[in-house]
Image (cartoon, rainbow, N blue to C red; front, side, top):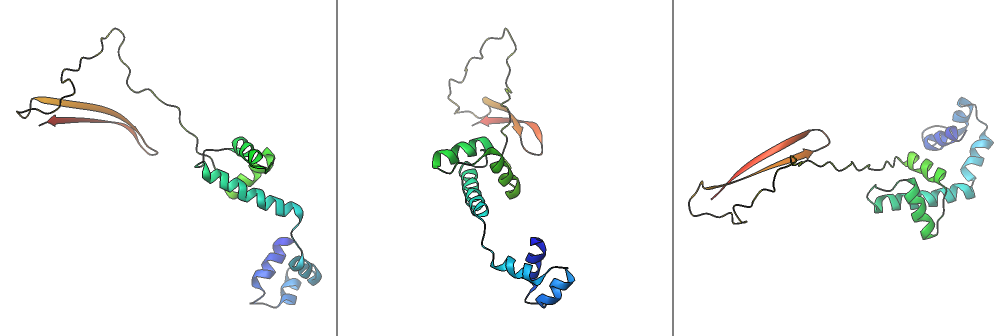
Length: 155
């Protein structure tokens, strides 16, 4: 019913209200009651909670889920249930970012000694092509996972 009334309200500048009510099989009194109706206390409260949930969600960079948001709202004086917050998040399209588990990429073979720092952190040299430094980095992106190897010649 409210969908039909909302449609009539949108199109009332283009079409006659009586014509649209007849076409949608809706009583004109229902439409006029819809346009003058005040928002219920529940709708007003839900609007306030929606604003608060969105603010907390954005403040914490999309990392807070329903439980953390409920805790934050309770601390700030706007308590709301987990179910209500979950429904609001679904309705608003708020999806949390899930951090991935940290993956150790450099694993030393057992029994190997720690490598000596032969350069003693001095990378400059008087003659080119004497000192070489390399690095292997594991790259994880949303699309590709791979390994990048670099070799720098210190001059």
